[in-house]
Length: 433
Image (cartoon, rainbow, N blue to C red):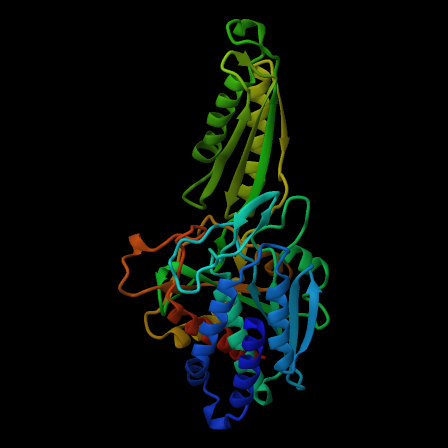
């Protein structure tokens, strides 16, 4: 029943919206006009989150909305993705806009009236499901931009491709998904995309602000696994062993010297983290092997290549010195490139960011070591990825709830800027061609 009511509300609101006169086609006014709808959509998706590659109902709701806008809609892209095309009927560039749609295996603890109570199965475990990274806001903002741009069809040139992407948080074990699969399936083709824009809500950036940076804004991510194999013995007689426990300790410390002693940190940051250690089952047994699992984050392609080589070199040399062996798997399963903002496109669109956000609200930021698979789109076509403020203005930044936590929440008034940015970036890029 809730889904039917939502669909009816969407259809009714679109009917009213399309009666707007040409004089009303001011993006700021239109964004203000549909803000209550954007908030309503966001709350619906927040209350009904779905895990990566399982966004079935989410995709149905998005596809129904886009179809009612009169767009050419394709479903089942990269399993659960939705793509729609707005064709102005006039020659011009193809601009792609992307939003990710998956939730996370996190049990919500926000106390919101629309708090998620959903539970599901993730890699064989029963888990709570929550939009703990703001993808619900991303969906709503892109729906808002689609609505405005559709109403302005006669004023556009070229085409707009709306990409609602599944599995940004990573496909379940044994599956593939996300932006890489979308690219492989040709989402940037037919028609060929010229540029792509994407946004991420930020819980610690003040509402009304947008952060930007040319070149690398988010890191490449490369998970890895090192298996150290030795010789088992009684813990009372370590001289009879080739101890993988002690070897792993030395490997962990050795890995830390890659960044501290081999990377020119004044040029670019990097991270080598060990996040899991598995080995042994009793206090008095030295085991045969130990497994280390971790992640590498880099903001520079050359440094990324160097660290990959160094992890292999360090692990294997240290293991050999301890009469053990090291098997390195790198990358382990998934691997995302650097989220790289094309410098020329950044400079071209910077006036749009500043004009849309207002004086002093477009802020140059530093790169972060988080990662985003939007980077796969940027490997194929020039693209910009930006951060939009979702922190209430009266909230101290140190009290802002972190992404991927049960307490994550945002100030919904920040979504209006996201709608305006996606819309104005599209319009202004089309006008420049």
